Length: 366
Image (cartoon, rainbow, N blue to C red):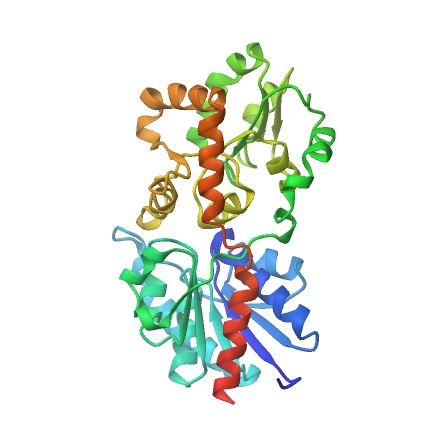
């Protein structure tokens, strides 16, 4: 393949769209160190900070998603769209990419639209079991759609869909060997049970409220708790750190947090679900109801229907959580069954498979 490889990646708005794009870029760079890579995102969104931190250049478009009700932002949308399409035309003209990759979110819409118009091969990476509006629109013209779930075939042209999985951090592939290191890192007692609670980088209000209700009971029963409460809630909950309970704003060593856990309580973002399939621990999903098109519930149910996890809606926590959680903690055979089944859903070579598809597109075009 030509040394003058030029790839443009677009997507963002949330970590769920940004981190897969960075993982794809990293794999391209590993294979082709001389490749030129450019990111395009939405100005003022987190990708404008996260992508440069990962070592890549990014240009921002003046674009945002449509709101569900009539707002001033919606009235501005046509102007933002025109502006973003014009800027995307300039970016593509100057950069001359061999291929354009979209990882979802409104930021990828204008760029991939322009690439399709200019007959540049395009690849979509769909993280969720239920695709968002942007990818549904772009799918009609895309060459390949790399998906994590079989369910998306209902929404896309089937001949374009390749089930690759979602890119995940590579340090999760061997966490079975890290249990002892993890217990030392978090200062845990190897003879006590450990629960890991994940509320996302910003935090999950209802999940944090729930865990706060049970913190004292967990201490009394000598259950160790690693509680990642998120940036927005750390000041509210840091005082709960005592005895067997430790509260963290965020976790720098996610591999060790997963390795230490006997049971995990988590939101159901696409990236988290893919990671948890590879980790292979018993999971209780509490999907966020505040996500576009209720993606998290659909992601969680795609796992739960295979008897590979437990899903509890926020509205059902009061009636269902206590019995489900403590039953699971005491039931070794149930833990083993969930672990065995969720591991079957893991696709650990996702990043490599997606870059294989990018290579095929470039060769086909050439």
